[in-house]
Length: 366
Image 1 (spheres, rainbow, N blue to C red):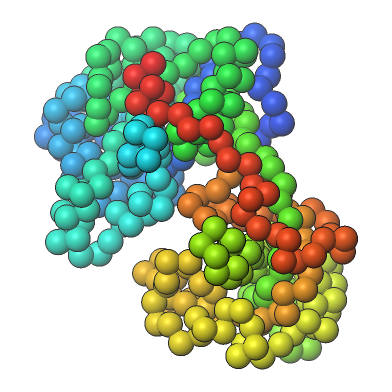
Image 2 (tube, rainbow, N blue to C red; image 1 turned 180 degrees about the vertical axis):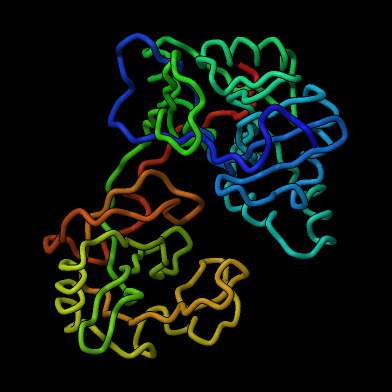
């Protein structure tokens, strides 16, 4: 492989902001919820690399084939790998958990999943085309070159849609979440491609929920003399199937050292035996169950200590979250405040905002 821009390349990053910027000079695009991926193609040679420059090529043979069939003979593109599945409403939606399953050590399973849950690639930036590097050119020029070079893509490789209209970007922010997208990205039209620099802006969904604190894990620096809380394990009661079980929905984990010490001391009065805990039935499982129960293993966590300290589910916490992935928070939830006025049994899934369904095909085909 001999390209004007060669791997490893660390992709350009984004810093969070509260709202879509209204001033001129930005190009807006959907924020995809997948694996960041840089594509390097030199004829029949194709490499896919992740955000942290690790190789992805072997896990996505169907994408490699699509790159050879659809993309320019010599190019370097920044984009996102994704998996979309059909919804009960009849459209398609991004499914991050299904995408995660594609990273597997066994070639036989990789090949099977490539056929069963094939991935797509959506391009949103250009680093090189032919013999020319585009990294020092403004995004306006990079986008124009992409539109010319990638015209007519209809999958599994796509070119992301863009707009310079903030009002349209705000509409996308609201509508596209129903197709599993993660928000909106704003790129300065005049900015070059800067590796590992937060040049872009990202506007993500932010919501709150009242959840039950059901356990904690200690911080990696915790000692018997100076115990520190690492993460709070969060739950919601499920009334949809009539069981009323407390389901594990995620964790809250970002605290200062002082707050970690305060929280672990504050929660000691709630410590209980696992046998008396709603999640005690999961304690003997060797692999992760469908609810991704605390303490159980998966290939993502092999070798990690997943033990936790069970707490009587008596305290309610308000957290901030961006969106759900299935029945769990997609990312780590942020501790907001205790809710002593809430009854734990009242904290269920029905409080969560449900995005209006939107067909991913409309986003990709726009």
